[in-house]
Length: 322
Image (cartoon, rainbow, N blue to C red; front, side, top):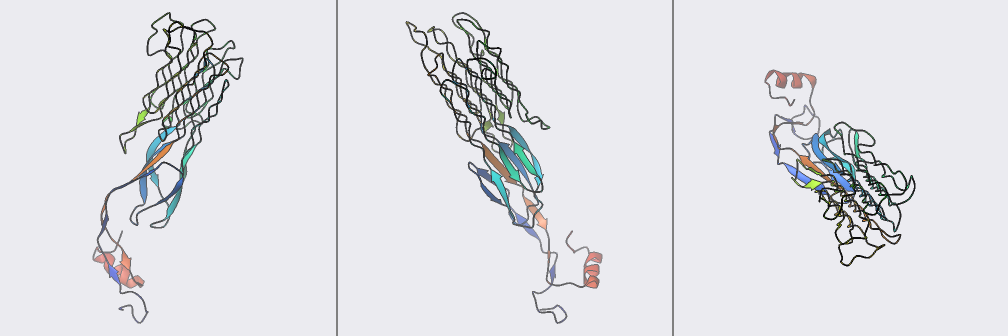
């Protein structure tokens, strides 16, 4: 005790402190507890991907992808709520659901929006892809379905991209690919046997600057399943699911088939289903949150109880914490 008669810890100023870099990954919702010297973090927040549509369907959009710095705002060692969004649920012969939002709540709340669901065969609005972090692809439908819009609600930088349009009505129709964090979904088309692998493909995802993993790829569009020549649209890199295609010989019309699910904890969109009311889209992949705390060296603090004159003396000696 050296506090002028005040009982408490000994006064000590200018103590050097440090802490190591630390990465914390959330695959489900929870609480992030910061290290004592952390006042800010770098984050990657990926929302859940949207489900692919059910019939001749569009692929689901990848979940919103956001990254950047964030001030924590609370006292040292505080806890902060982290939410990880679920993937959108699929539906047989119909449009599925959008993915769930992911977020971190600190000095401000940063939210990535769930991916939009892919459209399913039928008249609008069922044939249209849904808006979201990235938009769902439109169905190859008898209606005039439109692609879902990405970056909804808008963020800067953009959290995602638009889905692709479906082909017009016809025997070789295909749904559009879902949008991804790194690019739009490709449009469906009408090409004859051996259609390009890029047609109906889901949009590319984006790499995390923290882990290097690629997240939030779009799901591939589904194919009209009456020819063994037509595969479903390819999955977008970053956890998207491939769309369903017949790929049997001799072919048979109206074969039910499910698009592949988006990969869990990537925010990938689900693949679109095939040409039957019994077809279903793939479900979206759940999201993920990555948090990095930086290395801290040479930090200092002052313990004990101080008078203003004592603080002034330490300031003159340049050993009072800043």
